[in-house]
Length: 305
Image (cartoon, rainbow, N blue to C red; front, side, top):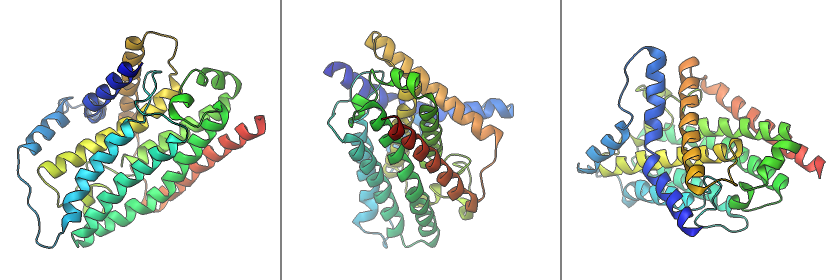
C-alpha cells in the first residue's frame, strides 16, 4: 500500500500542470477557437526555469523565499492527500488541520513576498487575497468537519475511504451541500471565475495575478507549479467525495481518479465560459453562502448522530 501511495503522489506531481491546460482548451472550445496546447504550462515552466531572476534593490530575502517556501508547502500538503481510494503517504488523526494550515502557509508566504516589494498594486492584491481567504478557509474547515462527523474519521485517508458510499446512501443532502461548498472553495482558492479572472491584465481587478507581477524566471515557475498543485489538492478532495473508490484494483482506481480530475477541470472551464466574474462586493456574499451550505451539512450530520 505504501508503494501505491507514493505512486499516487508522483501522479499528482506530474499531472497537476495538465489541469490548467484542460481548462484553457475547454474555454477555447466554447469560444470557437483552437486554443493553446494541453501541455502549455509544462512548456512555460521549462522556459521559466531556464531564465534568470531579477530582484529589486528594495526587496529582501522574504521576496526570494516566498515562491520556494510556498512550493514546499504545496508539496508537503500533497503528502497528506489520499487519491483513488489509497491512503496518503503521511496519514494521522487530525491531518486535515495540517492540510488547511499548509495551504494557509502557501498563501502567507506569497502575500508577504508581494508586500516585500513595496508596490501599491501588489499590496492591493495581497489585501484582497487575505480578505477572501479569511472567508474561504472556514468554509473548507467546516466542510471537512462535516465529513469527519459523518464518517467518524479525523484523518483524510480514513474519511475518503470505504465509509463515503454509506454517507451518500444515508445523508445524500449533506453530501451534496459539502460538494457544493467545496466547489466554491476550489474556484475561490484558485482565483478562477467568478471570483477572479486568471487571464486579466487590468491591475485594478486582479487578486492573485497582481501579487506575482515582480516575480520572474524560476521564482515565477515555482509559483505557477505551486498553484497547479493547489488546484490538484482541492480538486482531489472533491473527486474523492463524488467518486469514492475503494474495492477496485489500485491502477484502475488511480486512472479513474485522474479521469475525475480531468472532468473537474472541464467543469471549471464550462463555468468560466458561461458566466462573468462577480463584482468585488459580491465575492464575500458567494463565500458566505458557501459557508452556510457547509454549516447546514454539519448540522445535518450532528442531528443524525
